[in-house]
Length: 586
Ligand code: ADP
Image (cartoon, rainbow, N blue to C red):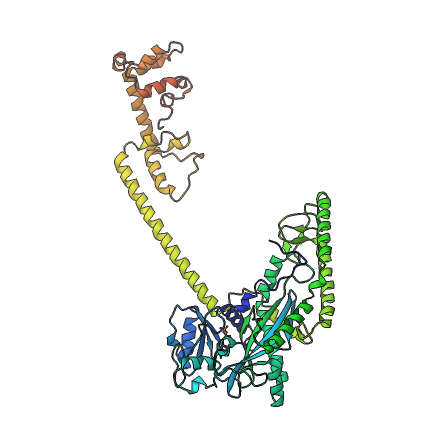
């Protein structure tokens, strides 16, 4: 089903590239490789099993480090465990393994993370807003650095704490901590606070929040840029007709953890952040967020009736213009890519959403006009949002967009995948070779058997050949049989004559001729067919006693055939040719 131009959807196709833990890790690892200084925004992460070797090598040399292991696409802290021991993880397990930030920023001894709400209103060009209000989720058990304590076991930390204590100390998920008896409902001292409360607390305690919020915004922009090639490609493929305005918008939940130096680290991105409101604090944050989002995306910008009218008009134009179209008209996709799908009416869309050259300029100017209008509208309807991209100074991100190479080539995981694919291909190739060798062997054996059974009859087996190929002698045909597996012989081309074999052939034909003559077959046939008289020389050569050897009840089939061809004796240049029997080996 196709989306209408007046419709908007609350997701971008391809946003999964940053919303699934393994894909996020893969994309950010790729960017980290390209921009090692700039992309240190995510704890070092390995996608298992592909990065297993790398992970074990890293873990082996850093015994004190703790790792947090998460299911590829889990949520709400499900299936997460922390370990000091890389050997806890078996080869072949599917998960992501991440360096554990063991020295987080603590408030009153508790670990916390921040949920930031980010609105993307367009992906081509990228337009990003961050909401001023968010949530701060606290752990409900006071934090103890695992690297200072006893080594940890898979499934939880050892020590005085129970597994539940451990979880509520290291994981800050609301879904986990709300069940803990220590959970406190309080605006400024509680286990769930507003982002503005945290900001106020930091200012009060003389922390440099300007730098912190700049870094947070930097993380958001860089993360979105890492998915940009896929977002842009998918958008253009899915919404070729949405040439002015954006068909999609999305509210993303960015989870960010601060380390003790107040450096923010991205933990994950949620494509469907919870909008459930089970407390006043939630309601205040989320209701305002949704209201401001609806205002900002300007759902009323598109007039449904107008769009339907325009579509009708376009169909009419297309029908009218279809006859005037030059067959050679070129097509362009809205992105500027050329479409070779074939000609169509000028000013119309070709199948798949490409547009003709004439309409391209029209689309570009309408896109520019829309962007201008959108910017004006957004600036006037920001509500609690702040535009972070594009914004003053964001030109510095331009270079990160220019990483249009393969998305899957750069990471260790992709290398492992490539290696795996290469090995599989090699295995297939070897299997194929073995199979072919077995078939060849069987064929050769079968041929040997056939040669053994009917070696002497071989010349007769190819009696159905037409003139040029009929020249193949028994030896040459055997050679040909052997070669045929490698080379295709063109049967319409004359084959080389081997002198020796040609001699043998002529001898055989002479023998046959003598036999026929000695049997008096020709004589008998000429008597049956009175009209054409056999040539004098032929009659001369037939011995009289032959007549008695062939009776009418038992005619020699070869002789019947020769009778039918009797007229050819007249055209023959020599005796052997004149007596040749159609269908016999010459
Ligand atoms: P989920 O989607 O299941 O909630 P997260 O990646 O958000 O998974 O992790 C859950 C919690 O675990 C986070 O809220 C945070 O408190 C903690 N956590 C996750 N990754 C790290 C890390 N690398 N270092 C320290 N704590 C982490």
